[in-house]
Image 1 (cartoon, helix red, strand yellow):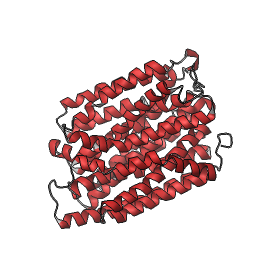
Image 2 (cartoon, rainbow, N blue to C red):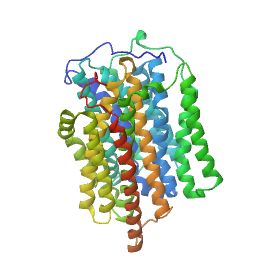
Image 3 (cartoon, rainbow, N blue to C red):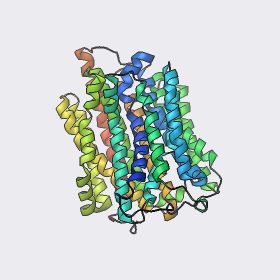
Image 4 (tube, one colour):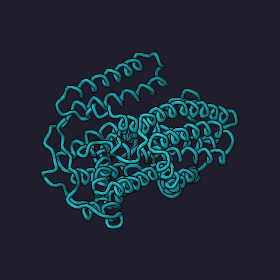
Length: 483
């Protein structure tokens, strides 16, 4: 692979305060992308009643964004390395804002799914670039780590804050406003990037050709894999459609791996995955995102369907996650400084599994028990995501940091897609493919709690193994040199 990425922009900064304009602009861009992952989750019952649709339709309204977002991240990074990072970032933000306005014309669930998929494509043009540019704003490794931590906290807070913002808006406005708000936020991000982020220099870009076959194969593998789960519920696990999708997903994945090994300019240089820190950090990131997306999708159904709460109250119920995400910095930093990457990430993986297991028990014991499980779970997510994001980017070669940012985001979005699909599928199988609106009787609530308990218990095992496996491949180092 001959792609050459810029070592740093034309201007670098000596403190976070000095870089507040570009840092704030890039954080806002990332915040908009991450908020949109979950902004509509709080409105799913309202959207279901307004547009009609089964649990599977609601699942794809949230999953379509993650699918295109995750599938196109690596390709978007390659495009940015050729056309200019700031230029592609501005195009992506502008497209994101304009596409969001199209929600005014949506009248069916299928149209909304298509709109969400288009938004995911636009967001993919921005996510790896925001992370890469933040990393390049500074030459001091310590400042780079601090800036990356700020970006990660902003992004994860946005992911969790989506339902709170959505619930507050739904108390006064139609659900369409949850997407319309993207337009002014994207505009603010564009102005900030123009004001504070330096343009790429021509000598910092590469002219290698794009790996379009690799992009198509990766999208096909992820899409067919997720659709296999939903098809199993609707058409049966041994149906021709389900089996065909499963075989197609495996075939696309195999073709992608073969193609990436043979092509002169691969989208993903597979030799980099041979580095333990890169491979392990990506696996752990996938596990943490799987947990976060699965829990948030499941709890929205729990609060609004089983409990019958309003969207506003259901959104505010996520506050323990947000407060923990913001306040956990001293804890995660202390773990890292005392234990190093491997052990600190293992502790985080253990907290993830413990939080999910606690959630399985808490769903039938009231909100306080759920809030306690949220805190444990979020502390684990905060620890794993921060450590792995910094470790992964630092472990990349100096001219591959954009690829590292894209790989980190891809792992997270793949986990998000799988988590949403897994929880949606299990709830449909264990409870009902279409959850009834209105007040539920005691028998249905009990059945739903039982389905949740099994779902979160299964998630605890999957996430614990995946994140723990990834953590074990990290080093005990706290610096990039030892990777």
